[in-house]
Image (cartoon, rainbow, N blue to C red; front, side, top):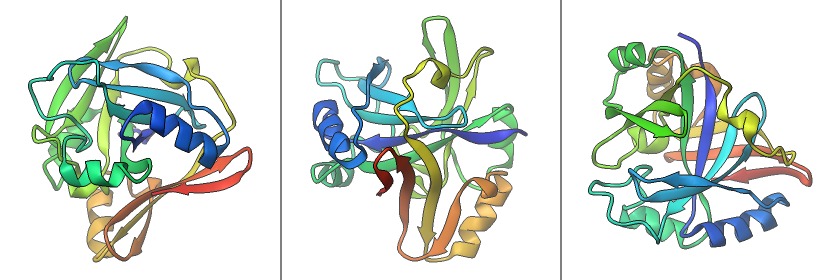
Length: 211
């Protein structure tokens, strides 16, 4: 399997509040992206280097009830409480060329594989039905795109780059083992501590950590 960072998601109470807070933190205004009709969410996106992208995501107040629990724990009261303080790291997503093999090899339940479409592009993504994140977001979601250029190539490049994904866990060896089974252990740094996910970004104004 060929696995690499596809994108990483930062959540906010609303896109407007998230854009404003991130402009202060990163020194750039994250451009508007699109809507996810199946999840009643919307986003802002920008390039993050190496054919990956930064995603700011929030519940779309203009959308109806999606008829299912939204992804990235956005319906979880604990997540909503955290997002009320500031934008937070929610999830990292790995681009794979063999999603079925990932599902077969995974040591944990990654959820169901859901197909999404927008325009001429489609993608298959692992999405737990209950809106949870594997290991609380320490393990990634996986995505497999339809043939064509990576979506990041059409996004704005504002000089922000993902430098590292940092994971902490009370049993780091256990987490490292799960990452190895998924063939993504080279994509994140693991340390011992309370469960936590953070993104280290290089910005025009210097390094920034979003957790």
